[in-house]
Length: 441
Ligand SMILES: Cc1ncc(COP(=O)(O)O)c(C=O)c1O
Image 1 (cartoon, rainbow, N blue to C red):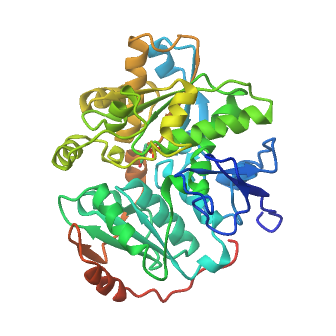
Image 2 (spheres, rainbow, N blue to C red; image 1 turned 90 degrees about the vertical axis):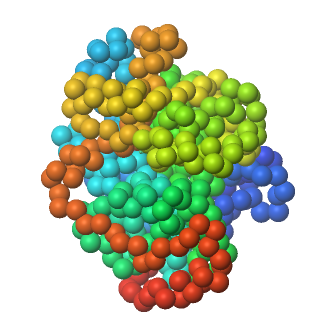
Image 3 (cartoon, rainbow, N blue to C red; image 1 turned 90 degrees about the horizontal axis):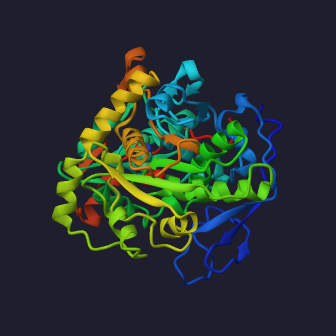
C-alpha cells in the first residue's frame, strides 16, 4: 500500500500577506513576516481524489501535507441521521463520527477526532525529526491520540498533561517507551500544561507540534468536512462542533474553501455553529463583542470555570482566535455563531443521542449536540437545511467495555510554574534510547 505512495506536492502561504513559499521542514510561520498569521497548505491537486477506505485517514492524502503514511489510521465516518433527525424534525442532518463504532465502520481506537490530527502531524515529519522529541500539551484526548499514534509508529513523544486529566490516558495496549509523560500537579489545567511544554520546546532535542499553526494538524481535522462533503455530494449549509481552541472550526472553513476550488461541491461557505461548555465561554464573549482580541479572563475565575465544566477538553484559554486566518476571521467569513450549552443540557443531549442513534458521546461532542438542539428550538437553522454535526468523540464506553485497558503512568510530576532547572533535571533522567522508525510503516 505505502510502496506506491507519492506524497502530494504542496506549498505554504501566509494568510496575512499571501506570500507563497516551500515547506522546508516543519514550518509553523511565514519566514521573515512580522504580522502574526496562520499559514496554509496550497495543494497541487485541486480536485480531491479519495484513495479508498483501506488507506484509513490517508484516503484524503491529496489534501494532507504528508511525507509518509503511518500505520493504524482510521477515517471519520459520515452517515445520514434518522433517529436524532426525526427527534429534532430535521430533514437533512448528517453526522460525521470520529470515534469507535464498528457497526458504522468507525474504528478510531483513541475515540476522538484528535486522531486525525495525530496521523496527519506524524505523516508530515521529515527524517531529520525522527531523532528529536515531539512535545505535545493536552487536557487528555490529544495526548491519547498522539501517544497511540507515536507508540504504534515509534515516534519519540513527550506529553505534558495536567494531573487531574490523567484518567484520560487509557489505551488498548501498553505504550511504547518512545512516549514519555510529564504531569503538572493537582489543580493545574490545560493552560499550565501548555506553559510547561513551552519551556521544554526551547531546549535542544525537543520541538513543538505547533497546535493550530501546524498545517498538518488543521488539514487532518479538515478531513471531517471532506468526509461529510464527499458523502453528501455537496458542502453542508451548517457546521456544528464543540470547540476549545477552535482549530477544528478553522480547519473546517479551510476545507470548505478547498472544496469550492475543487468545483464539484458547491460555491458556498458553511455557517460555523460552534459551541463552548457554559460557564467557560471566552470565545463566545469575544465574538459577541465582535472583538478580534480575547477579552480579559481573570485567572481564578477561569480556573473555577474549568473545574465546573464536564467537557474539560474545551477549556483552552489562549485559542487561535485573534491571529490572522484564525477563528475570528473564520467566523466573520462564514457569518458564524458561537453558542454554548450547560453540563445538564449536554447530559440530556448525550442521552438523546444514545437513544436515537445508539452510541455514547464524549462530553465535548454532547455539547455540540446540545447546541444543535438549542439552535433548532431557537429557529437558528431551517428544518430542511443540510447540517453537518461533527461528533468529535464517541464510543468510549463501547470501547472500554470491549477492550482491556492499559493506563500510561507519568514519568514525573511537576509543580505549576516549575523552574527551568528542575525541568531540565527531570528531562535528563528520561531514557530516550529506543528504536525509532525512519521508514514508512
Ligand atoms: C472530543 C473533542 N471535541 C472537541 C474538541 C475541541 O477541539 P478544537 O477546539 O481544538 O477544534 C476537543 C479538543 O480536545 C476534543 O477532544
